[in-house]
Length: 168
Image (cartoon, rainbow, N blue to C red; front, side, top):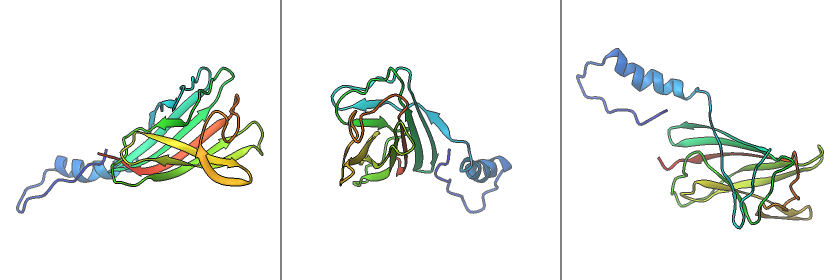
């Protein structure tokens, strides 16, 4: 809810409602509950279909700073599509000419099946792309696909967190 503060005029008589809107309400919005949204899960060739899985997103926007969490839990009837995977953002990123890096994590079938990666937002984008290492011995990052870094299966989770500047 935060927005640009107003410009005050010398000698202005300030009403309580104005002070509440300009100070109290803006300050309170920084401690608001996060907003939920449903991210879109897409792929560059064929889109995945969630079916009985779940995909949730939460975010908070303070000024132009957005903090976002995305959590995907695959289901027994989820199909994974083909090509490079991406997830939609709640708010379009600023066109600042830089890419933003967030954190991505895949949890596999057992507690030892975990892959750490990065989430990349290109300048002006409305989606983020997870990247994971190609293999344990190769730490170069590649797009997340249905088979990279692991063949996705029921009950796998992809957890993503990022902080970025919004376009507005």
